[in-house]
Image 1 (cartoon, rainbow, N blue to C red):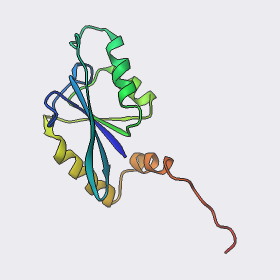
Image 2 (cartoon, rainbow, N blue to C red; image 1 turned 120 degrees about the horizontal axis):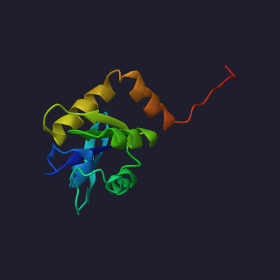
Image 3 (cartoon, helix red, strand yellow; image 1 turned 60 degrees about the vertical axis):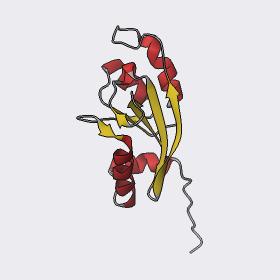
Image 4 (cartoon, rainbow, N blue to C red; image 1 turned 90 degrees about the vertical axis):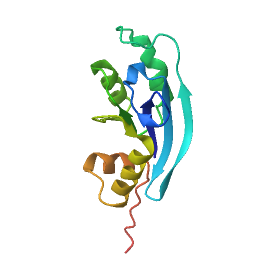
Length: 131
């Protein structure tokens, strides 16, 4: 599954979603993770009530399942959730690599119900009634 990280330095989740200069996207599964791409944003990203700056970010992460952020505003969170992306807030800056490893461990074990539901959406259900 694809996971997005709001980051200023491409190493840590250390950015507010609306102010993030970069969004790093990784593919994470129980067997490991790999970097997919980094998307850069420029212009005036500071808190100013300008909701237009969110649209390109939402578009950039639309294929992601989870978005890790240091912080996110109410309208940003609502727009992320409306696109079926689960926002996850970190309490303090945390290394993207460490978060990927933690997520791998969760996927290997028993993921929480919300994550199981998201993961199941990508798989076809098959019922074999002949047995």
